[in-house]
Length: 162
Image (cartoon, rainbow, N blue to C red):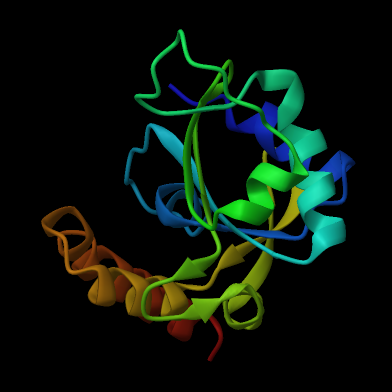
């Protein structure tokens, strides 16, 4: 089970450029969706990779399913050499994505995000419209099942803005 407060605090304190996507973003918009991990889209700029590596280092990140007896080095170079990482950490599972299906790379995701207060931090989360695009593009059963709730949340939001 993820301890999102610790992960978000680490990202914020290290000034990581990130947008929360997936289940935690759904929760941030008022969804009843339960999630076991934290999914973020992150900037691939070199300075941000350094910040991201530093933010997660205290939590001993390793690829999920990676053999425990094999050496894994978590640093800026590792992030530079990959794009998407499904990590297990001492604070729970964290997925890092350089691109979000249906939305695009970090700059597109950032443009599709809104700022909300989550666990006491002002953070960027993918907007309801962005989540709808991403969930439709992913097309997995678990993604398609949240579409009706997301559409209902979009309607509630539209009515409250009228």
